[in-house]
Image 1 (cartoon, rainbow, N blue to C red):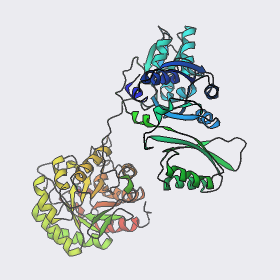
Image 2 (image 1 turned 120 degrees about the vertical axis):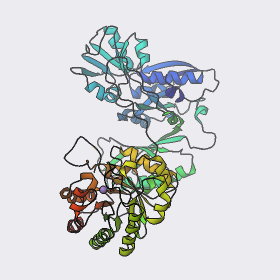
Image 3 (image 1 turned 30 degrees about the vertical axis):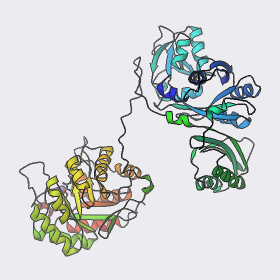
Image 4 (image 1 turned 180 degrees about the vertical axis):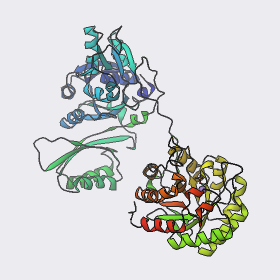
Length: 594
Ligand code: PEP
Ligand code: MN
């Protein structure tokens, strides 16, 4: 028993009982393992009663042949186990608890068998589905569905045939003398199955184990209802549950052969029917459904056992599911309630939230004439902010490094002259305070995306930040960098995709436009695109501007120069004033993605 599965069965109250429990399959099946673990945790003697069908399990309990019954209803990979829900819905049973169990499948064979030598693998059809990827990697192996995993292990052992394998638990392997040929063979390590434990409605005892003391927080209710096939009927039902503060954790359609004009659904709802809110919701649901049946309310506290354990060791040369990298936590940049409402204000300019904005200007501020002329030109074409670097992060120490604070002053003058807010890069912690006093938006350049001290410093300012993606940074790393800024209390971060390094050399970088829909899904922060650095070649910038808007960017950052060939930095990618005006006209025809 894994620790996750141990936790799934709760704490043991001291009892001195014999418990007979019905399940589908034979000893060695997963249901049997779940019941054994449950009985062990409660310190009771378990008398197993294997049945040949799901309905047989319900019958055994209702006929008093077993105190308890257990049926699987749902698997994380294979989905709803309809037969389980159907059996629970069909009979009057008293549902007690759901048990969430990690299905730790092993490929088993007789001693001496090898994976390469297998020609047939037996298991329960749902388990075969859970291991689809692994099985797909084996050539010329037939998948044979059998009633349960215990039967698969037993039959392979009895045949003594090294060309046959079974997928079952390690417990089944031990029980039938089989050896493990591979483990970690499910498509995903979070391969949980939900089982529901129940008893006959008139049974005594046991239920107290699952009764909530006062509140219904850790309980769940399964329902089945039918609605007429008219638009909005299902939506109304869900709205009623939502309006009563009830979370729906599962919704699945139920086949209804021979019934036309209506559809039935299985629904799991957090809470208990004895809760007044729940009862009220049910009354309202009855008015909008054709049929409504409460299958039962039960303890759902074992859901807390869904913890990931360390990846298991591969026993043979079988392909293993790669361990998942630890997920970074970005609590502040992934505020779901704000999705689609990305918005950062820069003076009167709103970035995001239905506005598409263009920021134009030279790579570097070079002279008073250059920046004033550029500011006038981009403003006339519809840019809403002016960019210009004064501190330049150049690859070579001998390349033009920018005009420094003089450049900042010139940029500020151009901003005042045109009324455009200004954006400029801040390269070091020492520059932050003075820069924040001088410009409207602080740009963090690609090369500094993971300069964590700098991120913390700008996070303490009250200026919006334009955070450019590092040229070798993943989307997760970009989000983590933004999280640094938000964690310091500055919520106003605009992300900027500006191309990443790939094997491609035809373009300066590879503009990763796929990042835009991904970021829009993962964060509420607005996302801009800088096609200038992304592609690095003037004539390819216009199509990428249109693509960026079409794919959902909230705006563009474009380099513009009065005389690109004379530019002191990034000459190849600067647009002329005419090019820029043309791009701005073309963008009007590209629909905005809301
Ligand atoms: C820039 O915007 O001029 C710049 C240096 O960009 P990046 O940091 O994306 O290279
Ligand atoms: Mn540049």
